[in-house]
Length: 268
Ligand SMILES: [Fe+2]
Image (cartoon, rainbow, N blue to C red):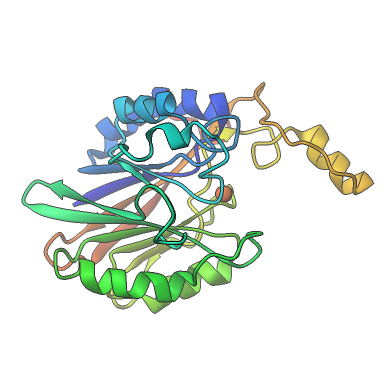
């Protein structure tokens, strides 16, 4: 089983990059499952139904989220029916709309996709992602050994610790949120694919996708500024491709995908 995962799609530049490159990447890599993190899709904060549908039309099978899940109020209009949208599992179970994982049929096999949010430097204290996900993984493994986790977190250590904690019990732990792709893609000894952060998809010439002036001015003046997406910029698309043994759930390979003006996409 092959999975294509594309990181944090941000603003119009990111949405356009999905429309342009996702079909091309699907033709090139031929994944059975395509997962897109869409938590920054509308103006950097959240997602609405139109964009959710556009991502599915462009070829995504599942959309994962993160700390900006609720920042676009329009999500409350459709999350109850959005079967392919997964928000962090560790929000309060009783009161949070939507789901924290979903199970896809992939030919004769299944893949579970879980979204988790880290707790370190995230400005929010959700349930412990480690102790929340463990019983869910144990339960899911009764149905399938193929489990993918998008761990939306700030710190390298929290993401790496989760991957080692679940090594051999899930197929992949891939980090999102920091918007910069790391180069530590590897398979842990138990068979779990790991990448600290897949990187983002959006404006290449912003600061993590936000307008440079506003971010720089906050560092200079220490005054609160409203961050907006840097829309006048070429795009970056960041992703990874993971190959699994669909029977054991163990990962065989994880490779990075990066398209930007310094690493242009060439048609085959
Ligand atoms: Fe985030």
